[in-house]
Length: 79
Image 1 (cartoon, one colour):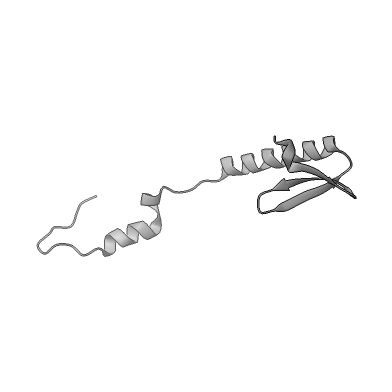
Image 2 (tube, rainbow, N blue to C red; image 1 turned 90 degrees about the vertical axis):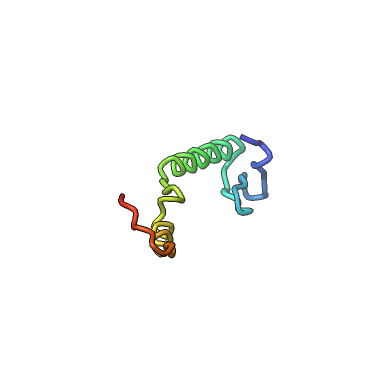
């Protein structure tokens, strides 16, 4: 974890996350560091759980292939 993400203001300790957002306040540096570690672990779990379809298997791609004009005299493909 980068200690540059953790900073102090008058009302407590904070850490930076993406999107120029700050999380806090925390009572001390250690609490802010632990909060940052929990935040990163949460983001990691979330990304591991998310599933994305391969681009070639996406519904829009399938419809696009069905709508493509066939050369004259071409037989439909069997799947």
